[in-house]
Image (cartoon, rainbow, N blue to C red; front, side):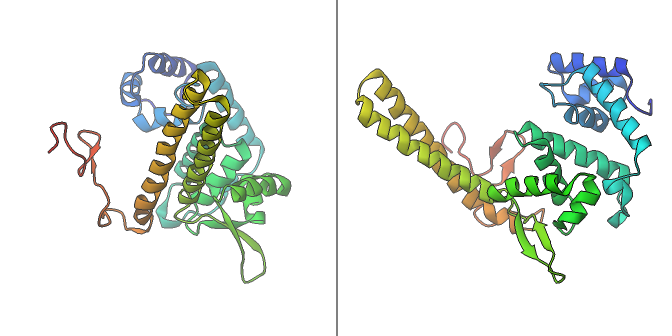
Length: 262
């Protein structure tokens, strides 16, 4: 099995495989590489829909050049707990950041969010974030303000009166509930439009259908988030009472009805 960094030709093969909708495992098999290598390569370079071989190769060269120029940063510069591999942690942080960016999060906000999430304590000060990410305090402050406004981090003072930024276990619960509330507001606006444009008119009918659709989505998001919240405080390997158990074989939950109603 070849080792070392991916070559430009291998990256082109990855791009061709993605264009043919091949799974990562199949692309990796054709390259005689671990599946994890292909997965990291794609996710740190735009994801499966935006991956470009030449751009990925140049980006990798730039990252390697920066590492030769500057002192190790982030996980590379810090001792790793629990016997973790520093390079694997650094690569995972890059993948996590890329996925957050693909979801629409700005680059610096994604970097801060990933950095906070992978710490065991789930909290860092501004100076610790600056040191780990090698960015300016202003960049960290702007990213934290964005995450704070979305309810994804909270602030508190430690014993030294320093402000700490904390990611709780239910970090995604609050944004989901906020999304449900925002969607519910759209429902009201759409319903208002029905009254203005006329029930039964083409525009009014369109808005009425939009309102019914969004109302269903809003209620479903809120209900699912409330039901699943207990999972966030449950040890891995156990399922809280009343929670649906996933059925990996069929993409359904074990509590879901079958097609014949049983």
